Image 1: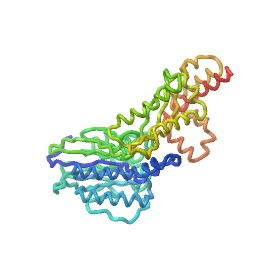
Image 2: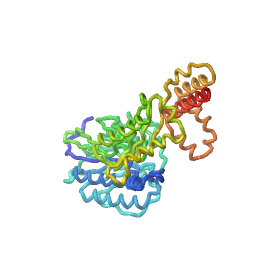
Image 3: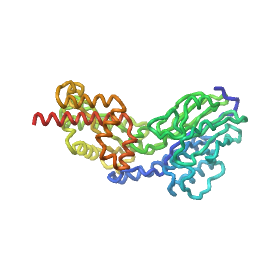
Image 4: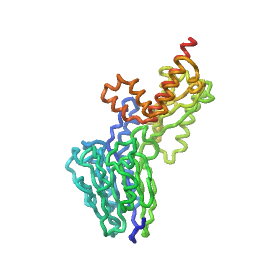
Length: 432
């Protein structure tokens, strides 16, 4: 796609700030970890302001879910107001749309935003001019907010170009091509966005950083701060520079104040507890040493592989005992700025014999494993099997909703873990 002759400019594309996210399940973590996490979304916002200042950015686009809940906390609203004032004082315009977490229908405090901050409404797509710091027209910015949390219309079809600008940027909170890991709000297709005539689609909603296409650019920057072990790695925003000829250069900037990581430790070849301890400590030190920027890290350790330690790891409380030992070896989080806190140890190990080998046996165990292997390979069967196994739990609304949100890969993992546990228990019964 060709871009008309214009002036060079730079903007920041961020989304999904989720300010004041509650970070559930922190009751048993040390105060230093809990406090740092609860402040982390605001620290990422501070980092965004610093990025705009140091990069001398012309304008900022924020693609929805600035707040974590429709009824925004007063604390989050006041902190955003302060940040927007800082951005405006640094000479940057700010363009905002609201998404499913912070729709227009949510409860809001009556707070004034500074001049140069524009919030798109939900009635129809609006078009606003974005200027460089020297006052020259850089682009037309288009956007529309969510009126309510659940928007199922294809909002992308409402975006229409208006002449008069060298560059056209569309700001939208949406699910492109029906990503199953996110709610299917404002669903649209990549081919629709690509053929729309816009030069850059600044998207929000998906928390993973993704560049779906270049020229025209269709981009998810991800969220600015990971909120759980499901959101690992660097989180932040894109600094996008557009040249006079229209070429686009994108640089990702990590703004996360706390990083979530998942590390894998294999038990293959491990015969003694000391060997397992050494591997656990080694992987944690590797995380510390390879981090590009020293910052607090919360890590989940996943034990994998087949080996002699499998039977021991299945015993009640053993994984928790290893977790406590690892935490004590690393020291208290308040003793260092760039602490590492092991969040959990996830046991996904197997016995020395592969399940497929045991499944060839005659009898109840072989038949059980053959059924489980078939179910794991077919999504509908795996879902049906787990529904049947968890029928009593599904009567609880919160548990039912949680089960619905699990991915096919997670269901398959549960089935494999259940089969490994079955092999261990039935083998022990046979030899006991």
